[in-house]
Amino acid sequence: MITATRIGGGDPPEFEVVVGEGASQSRHVVTMSQDLGERLAPGNTAEQCLEAAFRFLLDREPKESILRRFDVTVISGYFPEFERELPRYLSKS
Image (cartoon, rainbow, N blue to C red):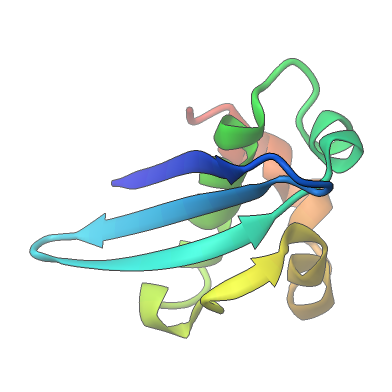
């Protein structure tokens, strides 16, 4: 289970993303500009974009390895294929 919730309305807005697996969960604070969200996931909400981004990440590393606080732009630094692969994860929403 992955749930993204807006927690701050700054620029860029902050979101809390909770990743639950069985009885354990991890919490992450993620920022993502509105412009980036619209570019990465046109027609989707920021929350849907972040949930897809976390599905992408979880296919590559355990939830415990995901940074606790980051901006979505750092994902491409670790995984250059992120922006190319994200539409596939969005279609699984």
